[in-house]
Image (tube, rainbow, N blue to C red):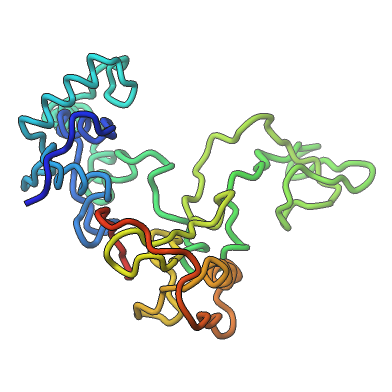
Length: 276
């Protein structure tokens, strides 16, 4: 048994709202231990959510807390947004309105219809460790090339430096077309594209004070299919992250001897580490 969620403790009401709408499902591929994110696990431990075969559902305490958050007009609870279509209504629309080709695609790969592009897995290049080859990092993307005639591209008088550092664009004389503003397209979720690497310090009961690196939805390890991921110092973790971003070429950097460089964090918090 765990302690009930205190009334004065902040809550990520987005997960409560998703559970209330019947949109919170288990994803064993992405969250291989509990099937849900750590935030949801914490809400289950706090008694606001409960496990259910169809996905985590609200408890009486969770329903009461969600009502409080909605009364505060918390934007995470959808208070300003219309309710999502109920799952049964969505199923009826798919079966009676959609073209048969859409329905076959949905039954084969439902995520292409239900997931936003920002919820997709990291690019195949990043998952293979070839981070420098990923082109889905938010850089400008050329839309097309101006045509001067049938199957004939237009060219600048002299080579032109294009808006993207992509080697396929770079400096050349092709008349590429670039759109202004943020691109409306898929962005890779790999940690290598973050402004700061996902280097974190353990704060629970498992090796408090040690460091670890998270990338592409998994813990970076020094050897494949092993749990050799812990680093005693932040500098060791940074070296491990740099080695991973570079494509894991050559031997992994060794961990420094001695004690962790920071004191142990207070116990009482929980963490979920997924090695594979």
